[in-house]
Length: 309
Picture 1: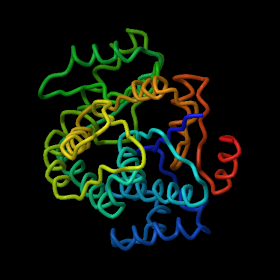
Picture 2: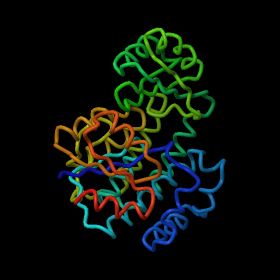
Picture 3: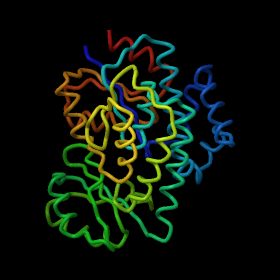
Picture 4: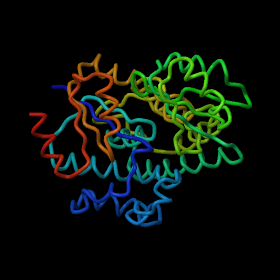
């Protein structure tokens, strides 16, 4: 058996995500540390319909809860992942889980990331949409044929075969929908977000994140390798890590290739650590033979242990 661990990004949050581990001391400790650093009560904000879906809050909340789940998992098992990855924002949880960044540093970094992303979209009507039933390369080519400097549209998440997310200016997202459907897309569904994540509209955020990362302690003696969204590399230097994490915000999430990398490395089992089971679904759509386990409740830990024996 060869094990990988993955961490979800924005969109997997839900109002119950802190409740299923609420009796565990390790989980409670991370939530308390986060509340102190963020200067608000994480438990209360999670229950707030508006705030939990506001990227300013969502990003630090997702990192907090996913890492708290991870901390609880490793304190109750002896699992030893060979590889890791995180989808978009989840990559930050991955590099905390493998001890590259401290939780405290990553939390402040992700808080800053959210603020910078929100600020960069001021005065810009952004949008994202999921394209279902059309090959990602075709989606990418159609976007490249339409995008212009003042009307950006880019393929930004290559999630699984037949599922690609596009993002850019809202009017351009609307404009491209008929072309995508004509090319064979079964569904093009706009997402309820206004930030054009992973597009060139966030280039300024990338530059500023680079400066933030240069002032953070980076530990390269980590416990497992993390595959980067940006270029599928595994960082062996501080420069590489800073480059990959900063450029990730304005570059596509190459999740299909990440799953292919897992397959090439003979990964047999994947644990999704964090709210929801989005990544479990994507992995199964990529390769049904992969054994994928989701950690959503404390009771799942025992089930995962049994499944991995």
